[in-house]
Length: 430
Image (cartoon, rainbow, N blue to C red):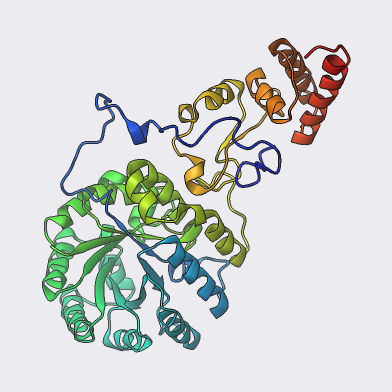
C-alpha cells in the first residue's frame, strides 16, 4: 500500500522512517570530478528562466475543461501564490464570457503579469488591450501547411501585418510577444527573417511553438539547434511552447533553456490540446534538480500538490500515479534493497527531496519483496521492541502471507503486533 506517501504517510504511521531532509542529493551536490558535471555555457538560462503559465489558456483546450469565472479566479490566485511570472488567458474574442473573465482576472491585483493570446490582427489586438492585460501574445501560422490550408496569407503579408499590430500594441503600453505557429515545419530562412523583423520592431519576446511537427517527431537536439540558431538572430527574449504528444515536452523545455530560451510555457498537469503541453509540476521536478537554489527560492514548491489537486478536480481527472513529485507512488520504496539504502541515506534512490515539496517518503513493507531492514523501521515506529533475529522471523511471516494475497499496512501492523505479543511479551524477552 502506498497511499500514504504524499501527505498521508503520517496518517499511516510511516512518516520518513528515520531519514532527514538535510541529506544532499547527488546531482545537487556533485563532486567536481564527476564526469556528469554540467559545463558552463554563457547562453544557457537553466538558472534564470521564467514561466508563462497557460492553464487558463492552453488548459481550456483540454477535452474535459470547463472553467467558470469562479474557478478561473481560484486557479489564477493559486498560480500567483505558487510564484509563476506570467498567467496567460484565453483570447477575449473567443466569447463574450472570455472577454469578461480577462477583465476580472486583470482586476485581481496579482503579482504575476496577465497575458492573453490572440491572432495577429488589429481587431484581436484592440480587444486584448480593452481588457487591461499587461501583455499580448500574438500568434500566426508560418509553415507552408498552415499558410495554404489555414489562413492563406503569404510571408510578406504576415510580416507587414505583424509589424503594424506590434506598433499599435507598443503605443498602448503593453508587452508584446510574437510567435509563429508550427515553427518546426516552417522554412528556416523565412522564420528567421520574420523574427528578426519583429525583434527590430521592438517585441519583448519571440516565441516558437511545436504545434505539429515537434510533438510528432522532433527531439531535444532539434529544439536545441533551432533555439540556438534563433538566439544568434534576435536580441529579445525567447519563449517556447512544447506539446507532449510523444512525451518530450519537459526534455524539450530543458533543451530550449540550455540553448538560450528565457521563457517556458506550462500548464498544471500538462492539460491542453490533445495530450497537452509541458506540465508545470514535471518541469519543476526537472529544474529543481538542475538549478535547486534558483527554483527553491523562486517558487513555492510546497503549494504544488494543492494546485494540481485544484485543477484536477476542476477538469474531473485523477492525478496520475506516476506523476512527477505528486503521483501517489512518487516517493514510495518497496524493494528490500532499495528500502535499506533509503533508510540509511535517501539520496541513494531519490533524486528529489520530498520535503522540498512538503511531502513524505513511504517505505512499503506489505509485500513479498520487502526486506527486514524496512520491517525493523516499522517495528520501531510502532514502539515495539524486537531483536534483529525476531524481526527477520516476522519478516518471513509477512512474506509468506504476501505470497497468498495482497496486504494493506493494517494487515502488516497486525502481524507485527501479534508476533510481538506472542513471541516477545510472552517469552519475557526484550
